[in-house]
Amino acid sequence: MRELQLSARRVSDDSAPYVIAEIGVNHEGSLELAMRLIELAKAGGADAAKFQTYKAETLASRDSPAYWDLTKEPTTSQFRLFQKYDSFGPEEYRALATRCGELSIDFVSTPFDSAAVELLDALVPFFKIASADLTNTPLLRQVAACGKPVVLSTGASTMAEVREAVRTLRGGGCSELSLLHCVLNYPTADENANLGMIGVLREEYPEFVIGYSDHTVPDAEMTALTAAYLLGARVIEKHFTHDKSLPGNDHYHAMDVDDLRRFIGNVGRLKTLIGGSSVKAPLETEEISRLNARRSIVLDADVPAGAELTEAMLTYKRPGTGVSPVYWDEIIGRKAARRLERDHVLQWDDLTPVE
Image (cartoon, rainbow, N blue to C red; front, side):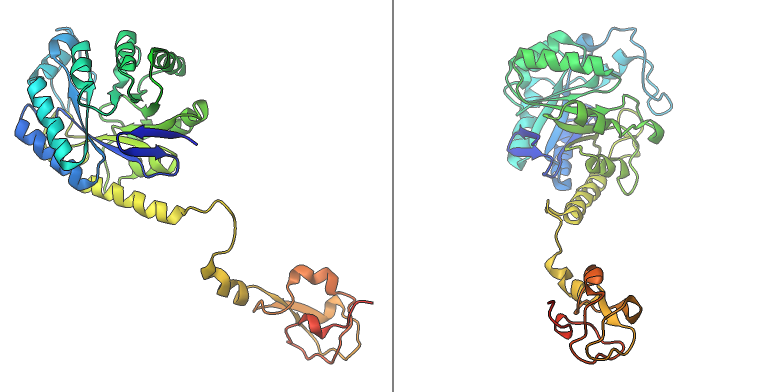
């Protein structure tokens, strides 16, 4: 069975998903708002509140172009956008981790450089690596050497690149790993979500818990996340905000606390609907249906005592309290032990013993 230990949760194919509310930098540099977002993530039912730990200077060159929807986030330079939200330092991240501990929600933050890995190692129960760093061999090696579980997004990658990242992490000391299907479009159009890739990753890596990091615009039914769960995703990550109407950054494709609650509710109902039985057998509640809705062999004519039953004398009707039609061929040619009237539900003792 696929299993993965993420903090106190043992995640498997049989479990509810481990849900990561990706706050990222939607706090926009406000520690007070970051604390509020943690509280909302907890209220919505998330397992983890996740942030991003970076400095623009170590993340992007000054002329790095945008790769997001400029009608939603008009900043054309990665460096300038990241610089807007990189004000948090070690003190703020430690404070966020403390608040998560107080609320019993896991604190997680994605590291984007060596200093971030060193800082976060003492604060996080596992490391989350962004899709863009799947080919960042030195960062992967440093994270793997920490010996903690790793959740790795696979957006914009080939399977060959995924395999190489897995080899690097395993070779560097990572023994527990989860791969998340992801599409690196902000936002991701429904026709590009490619949720079928969850199954491809599950087939390629039958030993790993597979998940999904979502960038689609959420609908009222939380269809993308719910479908991902049904397809086998057991680590679910989605950007999280207090106000989806805010302009720019990651607000426009994020979920809010109400979306999160709906998704958690969907999963709860689906687990109930799916059930836990691995054996095909009637339920106790179906016994009355087996008895009354199934068919019995019924006389379609008056039959004298001693007469040999022919197919023309028989039909099949409800209820199933008599001889089942599964024995149709065995009944043909048997003799009536007594006179039987038309519409009589045939019983075994209506027949003479077989000589």
